[in-house]
Length: 315
Image (cartoon, rainbow, N blue to C red; front, side):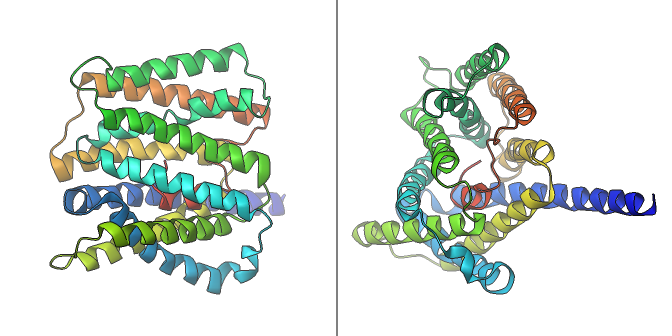
């Protein structure tokens, strides 16, 4: 009995700490986006921004490898998958950062959170997973929420919003790749290789379009990279402490933080369509996560992907 009480208390403490770390990681993520949107996106090429974020994000990842997980976790027999994922994530990162030029977080994040809906459909066609009628209805309702936020056919709908939906498809494909080919790879290895590949590609492209940094922007890039890496480690730790049923819904803190930071940094207030669409998408995604948990499926924010996702602009 004493052992059971002690175990329960330790589990409660782990859950409390895990939720705190997950919340902190997603708030850090939105903070990085806010800095990029406010200070960088209108002055530097998107790929150059990616390069510096990738470069400095390596610092906390390297420290984690050296002092916590050890370098042996980088042993990898799925390099070709990592290469493909690195390219896809770099494309997705560029799409998301480019959208900061014309749109608020209350428009951007809800569209990205259509990823669980897309993942459900791709899992049916690629992984041959069954979709029950309730999950199918949740997917349809969720896509209605995307339409409410983006409002196609109006002047509100832009090409960058359309590209965001493409970015959500890329995120879903990345999860599919992990489910099918790399389930047993370390999360820190995913982060490392994703960063390395993105850094190499972005550095090559940046040499062709480089704009000299002005004032003290190098220090802001350094700050963004460091806190992005720390955010990744926070979420990775949270994913290990919490059961999937507790961890997966934490990603929706990003939507709330996006609304708050959008107002504090830019004076953005979501309109009726954005609030309504966000709620519809969120409830649909949470229902799908719940059903996946019931069926024992890997959730959208799988434990193997969270570190790589957070650094590379994923929800």
